[in-house]
Image 1: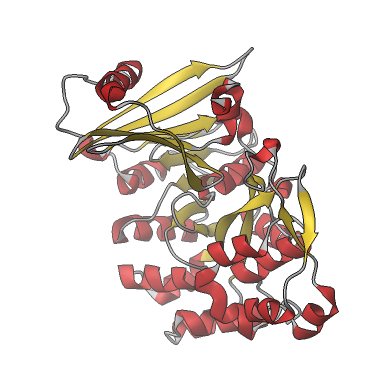
Image 2: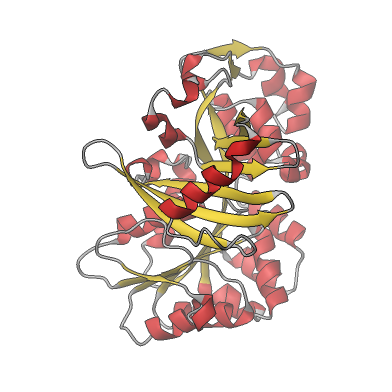
Length: 393
């Protein structure tokens, strides 16, 4: 099959799903964030294929009742290496295998190329270069939070600073940074790592995720005592992160004193450069998305990918991030101390110049990087604010 003509093409896939069913055995690839069915091998290959992958990942091939996790390292060309995280799950009709591909050569550490708009990039860089405080990156699983964090750490990684990270898992090794793999089963969780970091004379701390009150409290304490703390949460947008932390039990006055910036992000698929073409979209549809009426009537530029061999006929090749950057200013602090809702915080932030995820995605459409369809798919939860506040607000 053409998909396997070059093993190098694995580099633009992110996960491989091998799934057994009663009368079907299928293989799907998640390419640029979207699952695509690639093949259906014969059912008789189900057990041999899974067993072979388990052997390569150093797993127990005799154990078919429990979940297992392992890793495979592959050499790719001269000096190239592909790290594959393997997860095996016992299902009704056999073991399902999901392989996550981590390619260090594809890790983008240049923040200017991640998808930041000029103003959001300036705000983000200003926040990460402050001597203390907290920076939070939010978004669902697979939205590129780790890449943004690694990019920030890479820029901050100098010989005169001590950087420690607690991660689950450690996805990429960065020289000069002390990275700790969290192991919940033996009590080495995010909170215990943070406590240990504070005894290690740190300048910058990165904790992979704030999952509970204990981790949140230690992170806030670290940010208030002269350390720069970077972390992630799973929230829909930047303002709702405040609600999440307050619901965990963190006092509002501590949040206003410790948080420098909150960045919500998503990944949109990039239009294939080889088959990109302009299209027309009805002004009414653009206005419903949040485009200013005068701009929609005057000719808002929209594009799509026609589909070609370069993009496997999908019209997309690669992804880029869209960002919603909330900078903690005095107006927001007053609202937080008054227990304002996430919606009120968002309105105040937009009035102060924040671009929502929908606005950021529409800017990428205007610049010819992505499509209207991707904007709707990725920022649907943001549509209320997209229609109220135009891009030129």
